[in-house]
Length: 426
Image (cartoon, rainbow, N blue to C red; front, top):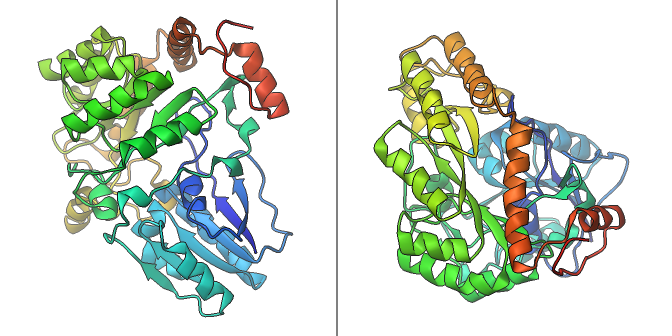
């Protein structure tokens, strides 16, 4: 059976340097498919989508709300040709009812152990409109190694440098952050994968640079200790979301190859200042993720916050505007209060104001968003800060003999070959 799996295009944040990472959801999903399914994967962010073909079945994997309407457009085109379409992914779960209007089936939840049923139904001509496994989670041990072989590797370079591959060590999150939908999607319970399975997958990835995409690694200190200890021999270099604020854990993370973290910065407190310093003390760089437009944010607060980011020597910063994605507490509160100004999902890119802020006008918050990007990167543009961050990872690779060298990266990109890791620069 020929199954065409499509990842719709989406727009980068205004002010953000344009680069593309290999998507994670589709490769994890592909690992759950029956063995007799022949998968063709198209990432519309890096290649054109050809509608002239005739696959047996089309799947659309949608991570972001800002991708969902494009996903509907793609589905409508294929369904007009009489080809069945199934949707899955985070945004499908957030927009299930609307998506059902454009799909022959929607899959809600985690796919491990469930695709045999779906594809059997398809073959038998009794595809169900809705497969609902939300909060009915498969065993963590059933999560296998992602199918990265479906990726076209040559597309995932930035200026000739190989970008990170994405991998996950756990699902679920015990936290319930105000703008986040993870508690709806993955539950409030932390669900770690068996560490030996995680290490096996990490070792198999033909890329020394990784992004561990777990919502937060700071969920269980003993688990972090065991995971980082097991990762040390791999000599991988990786970034992630927050790590436990504990010297032993941070030291183990650094030994295991922690390169930088995405750390939410929500105020100008000494706690945040100390948190960033402690990462730096362990040789771990920090990209601050800064959400603008919370109900306690005044114009002065936002301007002071941007100045604070420069004081604490962040390596990078990513600014977004509070966006009330469905099935979050932010959406529930703002919708109930009549403060949402737009329900056009194309506007939900996290760089547009789609709600009425409490203390400033929507236009002013939009101006402050631009001010934040321009001020933080005024003296050192974002590409230069990214270059310095890449220098740090190359220095770490040279120190432990895993650096490929720019020439080898370019060769790997050009010929699509698996380059053997070796010490020294070519």
